[in-house]
Image 1: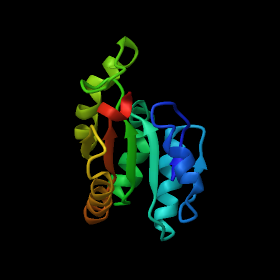
Image 2 (image 1 turned 135 degrees about the horizontal axis):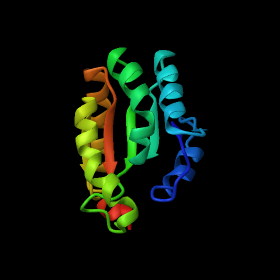
Image 3 (image 1 turned 180 degrees about the horizontal axis):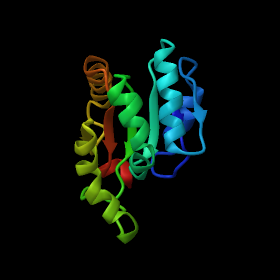
Image 4 (image 1 turned 90 degrees about the vertical axis):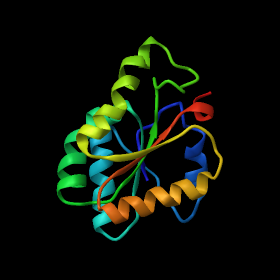
Length: 148
């Protein structure tokens, strides 16, 4: 999993770091995260990228060229800031949040919004299967109780 450090979902980083089955790679920006994850996928690994939804804007070129055009499945684990269910929503994130879904749709990226931890493991496995079946990035948008 590649990631750009951020605060909303930061509690999962130590869990990933402590999991011997996963490699965690910090990056300087989200475009780099997508490119590194794509390289890992092409090298035979199951890759994911962890970012805030503002990172979709930054990485959109790589998501289109590598993810969509070349058909590289990547799980996008995204903190959905500024969306309606965001418990800490503020003017800083509201504009980004209102454009997140339309941007994913414009990029042709399928997504699932997760507001609570019910059946979380099953939903993550579903998203990974979908990314692999579609041969494209698939986004999990974490909000609601994850944004407290």
